[in-house]
Image (cartoon, rainbow, N blue to C red; front, side):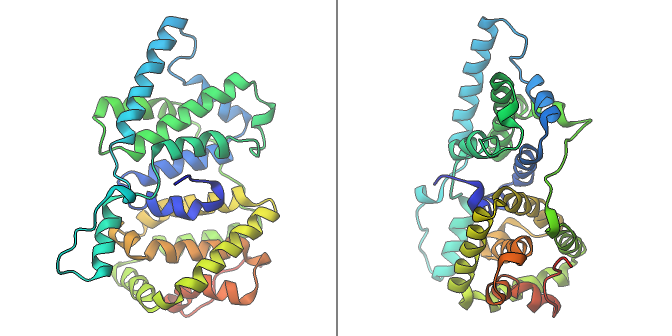
Length: 303
């Protein structure tokens, strides 16, 4: 399945179930928010930068092999078989979701090159194409290396992720501008980070209570994504979703929580927060329903 910034919540669903999904999300957020200076710095960290042609060719072969290893290291859901047995259907589905992803590393790499650093990036069009291509290589390598972190040996993983880490160690780069939604998103994230085990249990119970709302939820998510597209805010919405990946882990939720629906609940809430000014009340209520069930309050909208 291809990934796109339009469907960042789907990518987030995969990332929260991967051991280093938070690092993948951080790479993508860095690319979305990068200014020209950041992209130049990332490009300068490319392993082939300044090397003669023969060394560049050898490095390209090694990188390609590393990407091939990564691509085969994480199973996709379409390749997994239902384990069957005495468990009920929901339990079997969760077991599958814990073991595989919807997308893969080639889809992730296309996302980096075509969407994150694609034509809608505010500064890429003005960059030297060689600089943009090298920055894309570094970002794609890092995202791939972290995606398959458990499937790669340490030297291969370091080969893929090291240049990005070097480029951002001292100057991480600007974060994406979340616009008027920023205060509400920050308040939402702060409450998640403060969750204890009782708070996490309330979210799990809210997910269970809201399972009958799957169709309205899907329609509301689609409507919010469409609103982001027509208003030119797809990159902003994607950044919010990807930031939520890290907060998911900071809140103490597990990959199993992601598989069982907690990610979808959080993704719906931030989708509502980010696009609240363009959503009708019914859609906003559906997306923010889990938050309301947990806290007894409406989403912390800006203004």
